[in-house]
Image 1 (cartoon, rainbow, N blue to C red):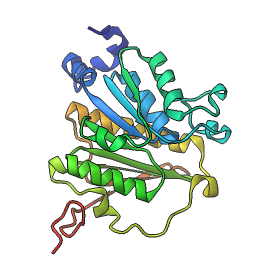
Image 2: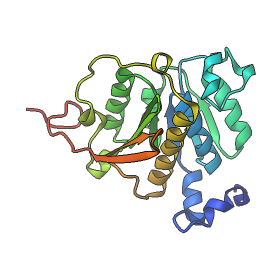
Image 3: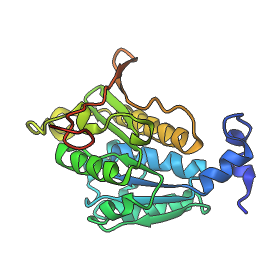
Length: 241
């Protein structure tokens, strides 16, 4: 049995309690992409006592990543992100089982976890993650951040909601990257924390605002919420004729 003193500040919350904490310790989350979003999300999920975290990322840490990817240290530059992240998270919380997956192992892992976090930065990968989550009927927490802007959405077909392709039907042109457009570290970190919060709410059976796109203007410090309607002709979750 884990030492619940570690989690005492969240156990006293009516929405968590001892039973909720036990539920978290028995839960599993897959974090795909352990960059700015994923490193922030993974730290809070590990800190909260989510019992099993799986990490997937094919990249190695570069010096320019350290400005916003707070899970890493200067001595990690050149290392596999998943290996470096797993080592740091194990130091943070020994209660949590951490698996650093091979780069192409995440599709099979989706069927084995309770919640999936998409922390990637390109549409082809996001489309593939969405397809796998729809096939396995797993809830997906998707986020993105660039410049001073962030967005967050939770997709859960178990609740009759839309999927990511209902929001973005076409692949379209490849958008700008943070390398080209820029990003301030706290912006991507804040959105990653919101991903962790949404995942915890899903695991605890709380309202995670499924089927809504939350957009954040960090310069104005304002959030907007937009309903995403299921598309009956969605090529992934609908019934196209």
